[in-house]
Length: 335
Ligand SMILES: Nc1ncnc2c1ncn2[C@@H]1O[C@H](COP(=O)(O)OP(=O)(O)OP(=O)(O)O)[C@@H](O)[C@H]1O
Ligand SMILES: [Mg+2]
Image (cartoon, rainbow, N blue to C red; front, side, top):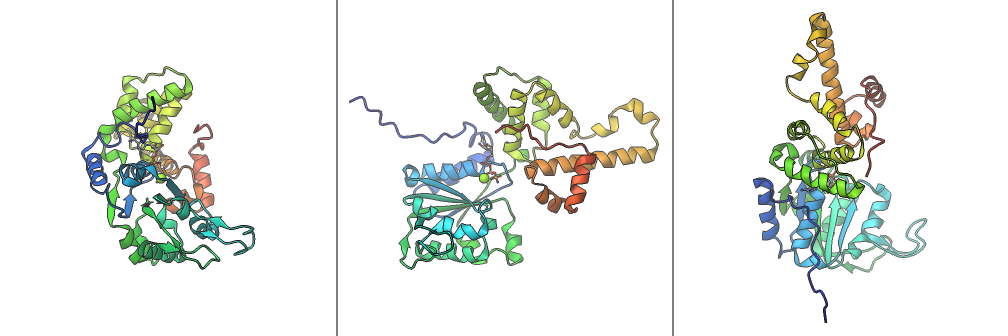
């Protein structure tokens, strides 16, 4: 009597698969594998929406009513990862005071989403391969085999082929995971989606923070042209900032102007007239350096150790450069 039996709908953002032919192609892959249990490997740069695609695969499948369990292989210390994934028996290691089931067990009849699979240590890669082949595993310190009834979706933003060549990623696991590969394109390759995403985030944050912010046509143009190396996550955070901070829009315009092609040449002509060629070159180099630094830091979410690796400078040099370029970590970033 009056019971609502509507199926629970996944909360998919409206533009996820409609805004670009490559996203529509992803949707048709998801539809065609919906009634299978194939493993899926989702690839793409940080912030492109891999998690959302993983959820879409789950909800489109017969397992959609079951659990969706996400494990970020990079966020858990390597020595704890095995127990996190597969559970442990009481007393199997110091601190294992009681038996604990692993995430594979929690994902029973659902999907387990292994994010940042490229960070999985080699020993665990071997164990995962066995799980995918035998549909069984045992807990750490245990012997009884436990049946697995979970679909595995893995994601990575690393070039696994290079990791394989270096012997850091098992080739057999790679092929086992890569039965279906979904490559999520970076935002700069599907710019057509920027206006709809912008409108979506603007609405969302206006509602969330009780604001009525609108964006100027200039800002909209700059948003459409921006490189977005941090992809949709960067766009989302930028719009959140514009909604929340009084100067957010102006800050973005100033930042975006630095990315515009040809701008350095026309910038501040009055100053340039009296500048020597050497000064102009130095200023250009500084601008380029600042630009690269800002882009990489944004991409790695201000993980300075990672940024120093990418930019091939020492950690100390990186800190000096950040100070020199007067870049500040987004302590104001609200999430
Ligand atoms: N089409 C979309 N519509 C609205 N929001 C989106 C869309 N795609 C991604 N997002 C948002 O962008 C952010 C980043 O997406 P997500 O976490 O899925 O990226 P990711 O590829 O998994 O990144 P990482 O490699 O860093 O884990 C999330 O807040 C997500 O909600
Ligand atoms: Mg992710």
